[in-house]
Image (cartoon, rainbow over all chains, first blue to last red; front, side, top):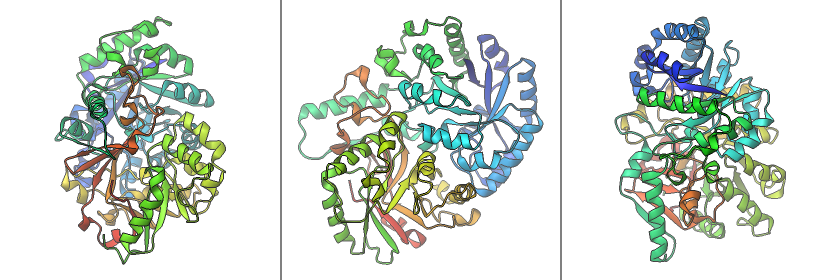
Length: 307
Length: 256
């Protein structure tokens, strides 16, 4: 299995390579896009983070060259949830540019863009924004000619083990480290911009009123509040799938995804080293228990941690 | 809610307690004073949907003798194993309209006439914490619908909560558009907080976990702005939001 790593800062390229990264993904920003479509329209799901998570469009050619010089691959993400017809025309131009500079593929989050780019000459990956939760959905994407599927992060290991072997013609990428999410990437439609942060974080930190139908025993109310406290304060504050690496390999996963395009790069590098160490020692991942585990509340694949 | 000029009004009883659906529909239809249809099923939960099928197959139909639309959720791979052998069974086939919420279900029911694209397929961002975004964003349904048509899919209608926000930039989708009111879906996922009530810490918050339908009895309201029911977060549209084009075809969800 390969290790897929976010690249938002070229100064980290060599350190990420030394740590064990095999392939990279990156986003770009384009002031011309912003001028045409305004501040709320995204090129990719993290456009609102600007240069913290994206590189200038004009720098991408140089980024591709430097990644290739190190024998690695670079995928560019165009994975907003939806685009207008006018925006698709811009996407077509971006794809032509990416092909001309020999990017290794495009990560796409919406059907309309996949359809638009299906003959663009670059391999297409379905983003986690594509919500490929089952074989019917994957079949739809396969019929469009995609090469790789990034599985949703809210998917069980058991379902991954059932789904992936049904599509030997496709590559599958699974989430492994950092930034768990309580909701579906594909259907969380609030902005993740810096001003107010994610909606789930805002709700978790604010007041709420419990409503129940009919009389509810005090001990039941306490249990509901305790459950909510765990969900809102502890669940997926970090996220880790280290103990599932061997199982994911057995399922046929091609690539393990470390996310964090806006995260501190040194932390990402440390995650790469941990993953690389376990990949280099097959059979060891099940024994991996650390402070992050927290009764499984930080697990990407909690069923594995229960074994 | 006064809506006598509606062309079509659907009472959304998806994701409601099975034994309450009949009464909920009757009471709501009476209050709305316009001809209404009913839809059942789920926008968010495969567990709910499969149990609804069980319920209906046992002869406990919540919509006996009434035409109904049926909403299909996004199934997990394991849930799909349970659903596919039953896709041709009477509760699904008898529905007047099938509402699909993912591309896999659209592919499965490709030959069935009258398929409506559900709200989960239209993913224009909506976030009232940023009021300026509502007018700035362009309706994107047209691009998706025309792509699907070019792929050979027949689309009878779509659901989109942002219709007429600013449709000039993208043109009309070219199919009837239904608007959900007053609950607009903002977020959704496969991890159910409520399904973990009563479980040990180690077993909590697993995707698509089996449950005892705790969502029937329990929900959270956040400052009257957001409602969390099951695996979904909704915001509440004010009455005045339902104006102009938005009043033509309404999917009305009774108050939770």
